[in-house]
Length: 106
Image (cartoon, rainbow, N blue to C red; front, side):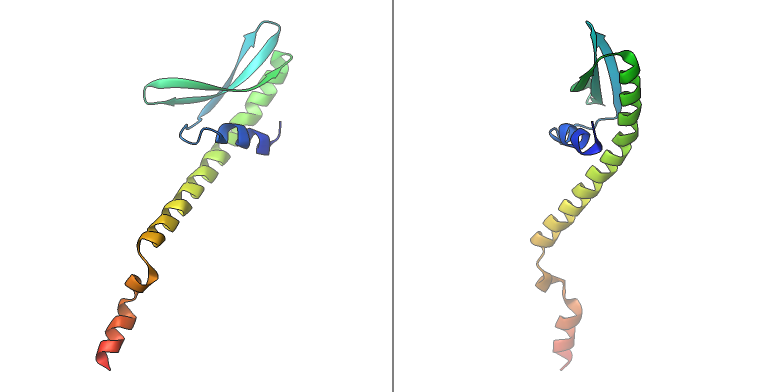
């Protein structure tokens, strides 16, 4: 799995803050989950299934490296959206005190 696929899968739940990745042996396969611990609950998002624990350990380590990058990217997107919403709420014409005071001086 590549970073874009991992981001797409975890991005389907924008209100969850995935902070860890773990795996569990399930029958003859191993399942990997992204973990969100918030609001006094632990949520697990199924990411993928692999054949053995060695693969699971390798992918889990990779996914754990990606999580901070994805959280940072998600935070930047949220800040930019908030900034855009703020600009829409306050039109540029309201933010011109210098031009307004200059016209009074004439």
